[in-house]
Image 1 (cartoon, rainbow, N blue to C red):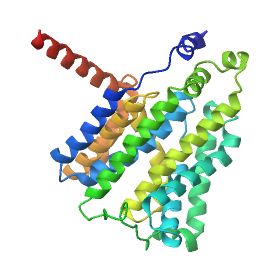
Image 2: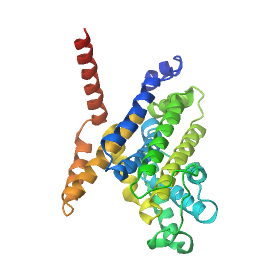
Image 3: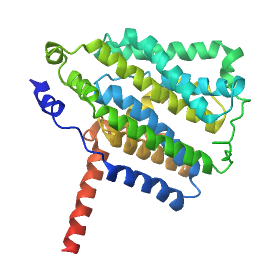
Image 4: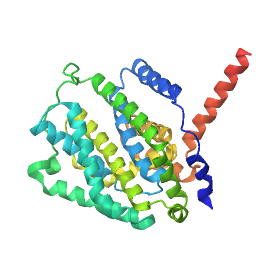
Length: 333
């Protein structure tokens, strides 16, 4: 009976163009640039990780497939963008397309087997995939550089004009606009009948199957979509840092991405961005303040993720927003 709550949304009218959300997003991009000019690099990192966490949200939040192997899709995207720059072209936009394609390809190959399962079985299989890819990258040193990482490639100026400077200004605008566009596309897709169908599968597979929905093809398409955007995040990271290490395919990255998602709230793209910003900001502040014991702070944050209500950050921000709107309306009256 759980799927009943999903079906009315699937038959409702299409969502109107949320212009106010996009205006606020663009305002934040410009505002952060002017307010924190000395923190371009950390904000760039937040934007890249937010794209990764949004891609993870497609699986975990919208389809209910908890995974700890998402770093494999991110890592192959990073290596693909780096190899493209090294042997084909240094154009950053071409590199992003290649990264998205390779991430989607790995998702198609692995997802054809993985999405047949769910629950703990799916979770353990995704860990196996990321460990396999990590070991392959380590063994293929002549291509990936192994433990030393892949470097020695250069990225051309964006649009032939904007060079990637040491202060991270171009990198910030590049990654922030990429995040904005990815959010627009994913919001549109996940509010379409396809996205609502995935939510229905998450709520009650048996009911959706009885309604005539083909579960496997829908989940496979979602997995490929998630892989493409995870590849974009990896490609951005490779192009901006101009080095790709084995940690880009590490289990730790997958676990951190899942923590960011749970912290902000699953099944909501805004929550994925908020959780990423909070986790990365605390991580950076703790490491800067106390370089020797900052892991205790991260450990405490992980405990909060377990004990706090799901999507605590998102709910708190929404509540604050409602209070601001109410106060503004009261003053105007």
